[in-house]
Length: 100
Image (cartoon, rainbow, N blue to C red; front, top):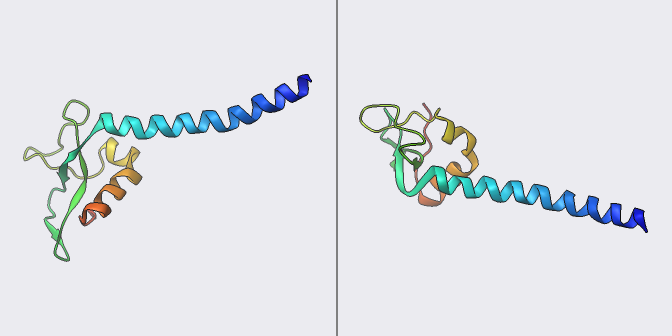
C-alpha cells in the first residue's frame, strides 16, 4: 500500500508543481505590465503600415522607460522574460514587432 501512495504523490507533484509555475508566470505578468497601454519602440514608428510596439507598457516602478520620451528599446527585462506574452499581445492587437 505504501508504494501506491508514493506513486499517487509522485503523479500529483508531477502535475501540480508545473501547473503552479505556469499560473505564477502568467499572474506575475499582470503585476509587471499595464495591458491597457502600449510600449512604443524608440526609432521605429511604422512597419508595412502598422504601428510598431514592443509590447504592453510596463508599470513605472518595475521598469522605467529607457529613453526620456518614454519609449523602450525591447531589451528591458520584462520584454525578455515575458516575450511570449508580449508577442501574443502585439499580434492580437495588430501591432508590428520591433526589430531594433
